[in-house]
Image (cartoon, rainbow, N blue to C red; front, side, top):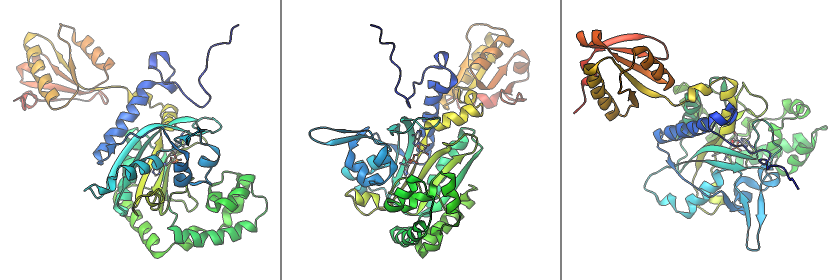
Length: 425
Ligand code: HAM
């Protein structure tokens, strides 16, 4: 009996070397994005944490929130005779658990900065940009409540997205207040919701369990109803309002544009104060590339000290979609910094020396060792995606110069040869 070949589970993906795949599943791009993220996180002082893919279900029930869609509807949970275990739907609760268990709060560093990456699992209806297994790139900074840290966290996400040549995203910002602000607001919001007719089924149920979540309902009829909804900003206490003003001031100082979105509430319960999303305009419905915010009560809620945290997570599959949509895959290809061209034995020796010096400085450098025409050396440089080609021919040698060709712009300049022979000791 032929049962047919196995297929991957809906909402999961294989990433293959590009020669076996269409671009959407290119494993080289997958790795490139992750490496770039680690590079950025490292520049901002984040160290990598690796946490398990499974945790006890109650960690998410208490951490992420019992009434959230993620916990109520989307977790893959297995009950064994001993415990109930879930595949992680997100990374923050697991990082917080590890932070407490390993007593990282005893660290002499005021702020513990951790980065992570890996698969998350949510039982969703698969569609473009919405997977059942997806990859998050995330950071968490625990132990400091300064708006400067918030701005730094947002700057990291902003710079990382820009480093992938993304230009059509928007940073949306809100401050959802502390517990006290939200409690006051919830009363007002409930009063408003109770007087509305025609709310969707989800909003009817959220109204009771988690009224704030009604605000980011995507249903068009609900959105119409919420045009007149009372806004949280009218209920923010002075401390939250000042924090928000200060964060906006620092973002402006850093030239990071943002849009205030008073209805941005985020889908997970641990948030308080600052909440933000990076939203892409060039893809369809699943356009939130990155979501994050402050979580002041989470560590305490999970049994740790009273300490504040902030972080974000980026969905790698959504970055793929944007890169593909905007024809940016080529840019992620491996490159070398310098390709060195020579024309005779003497210039080969000098280029060999220069290669050695540049590599010592940390550059990726390549050259041929057997004689090839200049044209074919340029072809190889092109294939290897060289950023810069250094040409040392007889004319250059006679003038004690070297030709520098920028392969992106085609621009050619000359410099004294000695400049490239310095720093070899
Ligand atoms: P989140 O908004 O649930 O936040 O997810 C963050 C990002 O993960 C989303 O913006 C999206 O790009 C991606 N994502 C979420 N669900 C899916 C899915 N089903 N398929 C593909 N991509 C998806 C969190 O997870 C928080 N832990 C972020 C955070 C960290 N907040 C503070 N620290």
